[in-house]
Image (cartoon, rainbow, N blue to C red):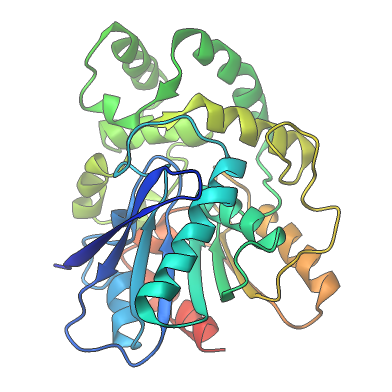
Length: 335
C-alpha cells in the first residue's frame, strides 16, 4: 500500500487541482518525476494492485515521485475542459509547483493518453522548459484511430451531446437516472466481453474494442475489479476537441485554427514514446508518427518502444509490466 502527501495548487486560470507526493520507504536519491494521468481518471491509475507497480519501480530506482491531478481528474470538481485549457493552465502550474516545493530547477515526466496530448501541447508551446525528459504512452502529438473508431466518434458524439454534456463509465455499476440507465443498457447490448460492467463502459466510451484499453489476459482479476472505482466523469467538450485532432491527424487547437505539428517544437526535452500494438483506443501509429516528427528535428535523440502484446493502459496496469515495460522507462529516465 502506498501513501501520499497532498499539495493543492491553482492552475493559471484559478482552477483548483492537486499534486500527490509519494511517501517512500526511504529518502529519494534522485530528482522529481511527475506522473500525468489520462482523461476521466486520477493519479491512482498508476497505483494498480499488482505485486509491483510503476510507483514501486520508480521508488526502487530512487526517484522522488509526484503525481498531478489536473482538471480532468476524478479528484477535481467536474468541469468542461479541452486540451488547450489544460495545456495552458494546469501542466505549467503543476511543473512550476513541483520545482518550487522540491527546490529542483528541472524535473522529468511520465505522461499518459490525454495527459500526454495536453502535456505535449504545453511542451510544443514552450510552457514547461523545466521538463528535460518526457516518457509518453499511447498518444501524444498525432492521434491515430481505426476507421471504425473514427466513424464511431464522429457519428456518436453529436448524438450523445443531445442527451448529456458528459459520460461516466461508473454508470456501469451505478446508473442514478434514466439517462445513465439508457447508456448502460446500450453498453450491455454491445459489449459481451468477460470484463466488469465498468470495464465494458470504459470500452464504449474510449474506443472500439472488446475491450478497448487493455488486453484482459494482461490483467489480474484483482486489477479488473479495482478499475471499477478508477473511471469517472469526462465532458463532451473533450470529445469535441479530440475529434478535430483525429480529423487533422495531429493535435490542433480547440477552435481548429492552429495545427501544433506544423512548426518546430519549442522544447529541448528528450522524448521516449511507448505504445502497445494492440491498442484499440489510439493505434500505435500515433506514437510512431510523433517519434518521426521529433526525430526529424533531432535525429538519434529520442526513442520509440512498441510492444506486441500490450494495449493502452495495461502498459501501466499489466501484471507483467514490471518486467516487460518498467525497466525501459527507468532506463529512459536515467538517460
